[in-house]
Length: 482
Image (cartoon, rainbow, N blue to C red; front, top):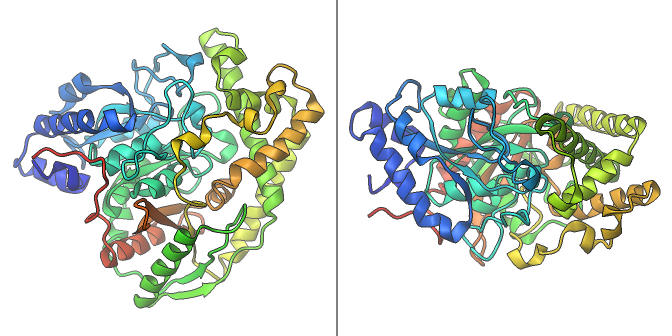
């Protein structure tokens, strides 16, 4: 099992089924690998080694004996801590499994750890003041991403082959790009969400798989969606697709040169396979969509905090929340039902625009992120301090909060310009590694398609993986068992 850090979950499960390796041995490899890389990554918040070892003999299902990690936000397990990386929830234990976790455990996967996230998974690019940011295994002085960063870092480093992560503004996909792994946000409603307050995030939040291979992502999607056919999509021939390419940012400013190079490289590979690639992009009102996005997130954050307060019998206070989280709570409380509905209608119009766009194009190809992973020192201050909004924590003036909403929209979505649109429209989107930048970090591309077209995305991703395999590259921080 010296090759444990480099093989995928599908291969691991086959070795266990053939009796070549015992499930407890695989779990031990995961434990050793996590302990080797985590001091350099800060990716783990809770170790579940004893539980995973005890469950390792339960081999029913396609992934029997394979270890995984869950976020400390999505993916609650009965009786285990789940804090959403918020001091407000410190000590809380989940009363039951989330539906997605039940399905994963039934497939034979064993959870060995819970991964670090920002508070309530709010941002796709930074950590929390309580537990800090997860370091990128390729460039440890930079971030691994936000909500999905801890899970993606562990997968990329070879500590575990797969993970479950949430995606509310691209968190899963951004982390996949920054860490050089595959991440899929399914169609809205494809994978069941948890029952925690605000888990549905106004329709923006989804759960999806992170893995080092496309076939693992497909296999996990079959488990999570309780539906077959996605693995077959990775092997059967893909008919020529009409692919729209844009190197411009959907939201925000100009695209990153590395992202442009990644998109152009993947476009050439797809053309070699007979796909038709044109330069095109959907017609959307990016400014209105950005404000609508932050409106929905702010209201959802206020709902989460209030709901959790009722559930655990604690009164929310700014003292126990990150400054950015509390700013969103204050904005969400100040907004009216009319403003929320207007934001939903903006998103609905975008969904109609994308439906019209996909009458001409099967897939939209974009860069995954706006630029290189941030240095950990770049985001020491919270959003309110950076924007001069600190007073709003204690003096929430409605008119000032509405102005703050516009400034927050500009600040947050400029960092993640291409992922949030598909949370708003509900479409599936996948991120795959495309290249390694000269300065050493991975650069991913995103493919998005019409609703319920995950099979198309998996088929295209498999072709890219075949023509430009990324598994041959390994990060600086990596598990070593030899």
